[in-house]
Image: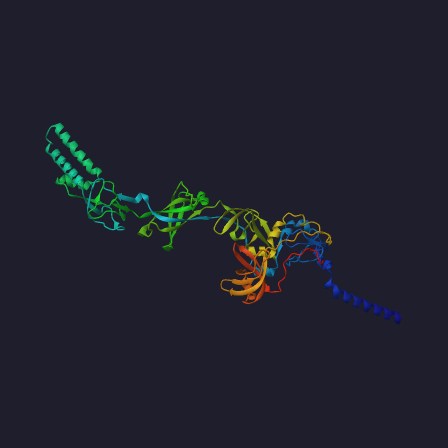
Length: 539
């Protein structure tokens, strides 16, 4: 009995030790056991284990693996469980970037929303005199300038103010004829009908001649009353305004039709704006316009579009548009430059995103949809009208979806967006896993979106965020060794870029001629970004 009891006690100790060892080793189980997820049943709370199918490429490429691995850019492959491959087809096109990198790149998102796009058509213009308020003083007879009352250009004048006096033998002769005829009519008022009628015709003919020469009624009445002709005739301003041109000189001779003065009323002026051809269809007569003048940066003048000219300038591809402005105080001077804004109403509420959210390659437009936790989906969109800050999305994005509005090009460089977009619709998305055999030919690895170089930092401008780098040859761009200036994507990169330090850098072209460093590490410590020949190697 003692022997049996001892055996039982020993067996219990052995089982306890074995169980403790098994529990201690459980967290270090294989990949397959760790990847198996336990989910609660919605019906009765029973737990059901989901089967791991395979691991897919985080960038949506037609590449899968039966075991965990990393892509050439260091991103983990995403596990796909039973039931997910068909339920989430869009997930195959997602891009995954670590949360740390998302914060470092300064990624910012905004929700697409419904709004009315109020567009402003902007155009450069110039102040011009209202053609309907400009007057020329041109005598209709030959004579001489006897005296000038207004003798400088730019002088303001009132309506009826004397401008100059002229002497003309023809004018003196015409005045004498009218005076004699008027006296004859008065003398023959008791005479026969034919004599009186002939004298009246002569007087009316002389009077008509004076009126045709623009002699005022006041002067004609004075002539008829006094019966004596005046040696000189005074010309007066026909309108209140400013003398814009003066050709008259004291003592000069003039011929019929010579313009001696020009007077313009500047209480109202025109702004003639040159609107570009692609915007002219949106400008309507009657629309209110805002005008800004460089001379008065704190003032905004408002006027109305009164005319859209029917001609186009073939050199500038613009159409003149006339805006009429009131000019109290005559602040607006003819020939001043002006900036004109004409608001153009939208067509109602439409789905819009900020203009910075669109990546335009010239042949296609793409936005990045943010799904959270560092996952982004590149999506083709069809664009419509745009305002200064937002653009209409006619197809591809729904209201409420979050889109990336900052650091788009950095996400492109960090995740090789071009390769992900190029993989849309491939059979490998959500399909069955590959066998993983070494003799099976893998899909071509994507070409890196950025470029790499090794060099020595010459100088750093922390204020402008620029670095002068003496780098070696860049094979991807066929560049020789040279010294050039780069910008940094984030100020934190300047910590690794000190003058005299040898570094390995990755950089992209943000816009033509602008090269931006996206990562920098001491020389020899940078992780290679060259795609592996076989993505399954080592697994």
